[in-house]
Image (cartoon, rainbow, N blue to C red; front, side, top):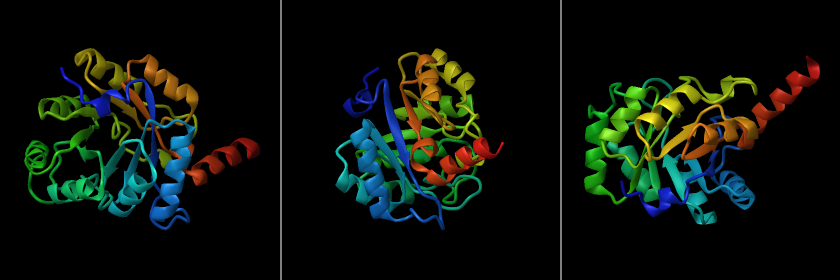
Amino acid sequence: MEVDPIIQSLKGKLIVSVQAYPGEPLRHPETMAQMARACELGGAAAIRCQGLSDIAAIKGRCEVPVIGLWKEGHEGVYITPTLRHAVACVNAGADVVALDATDRPRPDGRTFEETVAALRERCDTLIMADCMTIEDIRRGVAAGCDLVSTTLSHNKAAIDTTMDDGPDLPILRQAVEEFPGFPVICEGHVHTPADAKAAIDAGAWAVVAGTGITHPTSITSWFKAAVEA
């Protein structure tokens, strides 16, 4: 299969997710852009970020590719849930758009496959399938996505876990074995350098780390728990 140069540039590399949650002190586009630039200087090969303002601010500050998404809501499909959200991410400057690849109902009534097809017609963009199960990964590959990710495999946010919780290596290994040579990204609960190395050793095309690098509230809580244990 032919791999886009942007995706090829991520092989064997670290992607950093730079996101702040509603109500948090760091939730500001300029702050996220500064954080992203610091991660770029540290060697991040790409930045994954959320929201139109953050996408635009980070794209203006960083030279590495930007994987953009737009979260709306908290239940069901909330990662770039509709075609409208996806097109807006492209217009904000995202090089890659991340979509929820599950078969759950979407607000606009389209299926995942219909969303991917319509996005291809409207925009020149790369598409990342955020997956929960191996069936989702198969769906993403069949729909023609450029890369697939284990983002949703834990079915809970990384900030809801401890430092000891690691990435979902079983689904990663299954996907890599089933789709040799296809860009399968390990994302979710990559909290330590050891987690990241384990994912690469398991065959990940690239690894996304977020909470363990860019969420100081969680990192502080991990240290606090260790000190007070």
